[in-house]
Image (cartoon, rainbow, N blue to C red; front, side, top):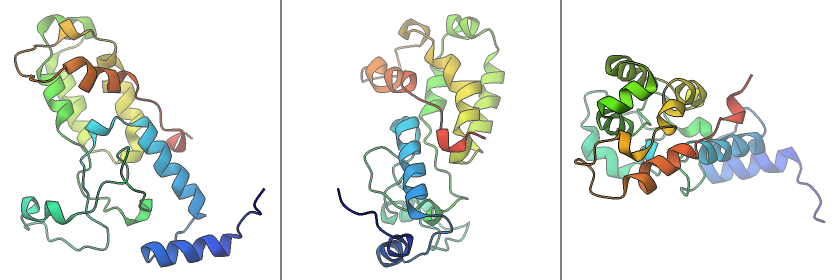
Length: 181
C-alpha cells in the first residue's frame, strides 16, 4: 500500500495545477465536487461556466464568450476543477427543467396536487439557488416530478425519448451529502 501524501504536498499540487491554494484540504474539495456530479442529473446543469478569476462585465454578451468558458466541473463526465474557482454569480442551471414543467399535462398537475403557478414559482427559486442548495430544489420540485409517469407529460414538444433522457436521470437524482447539516 502506498504511503499517504502529506497535506502540504496536496496544497502544492493544487497550487501548481490550478494556481490557487484551497482554504480546506484539497481532498475535501474533490469529494464535494464528486458528490455534486453523482447527485445532480447532468442535463440540469449548463455544460460550461466561467472561472471566478475572469471578470466579465454584466453587460458583456455572454453568448459570444460562452464557448471560451471551461467545462462545468459539477456536470458528470467533465474534468475536475476546484469548487472555489467557479464563479458563484453565474447561472449554472440549464433551462431543461423549464421545459419539463411546461410539458406537464393538466392530469400531471393534478397528480402533483398543486397549481402550475406554484410549480413555476418553485422553478424560479431553483434557478436562483447556488449548487449547494440542490437538496432544497430536489425536495420541493424534482422529487414530486420524478414520481410522475411519461403519460403525465405532453409528447408534442419532444423529439427524443423523453423517459430515457429526462425522467430516468431525474429518478436517479440524489441528495447532496456534502450539503447536509
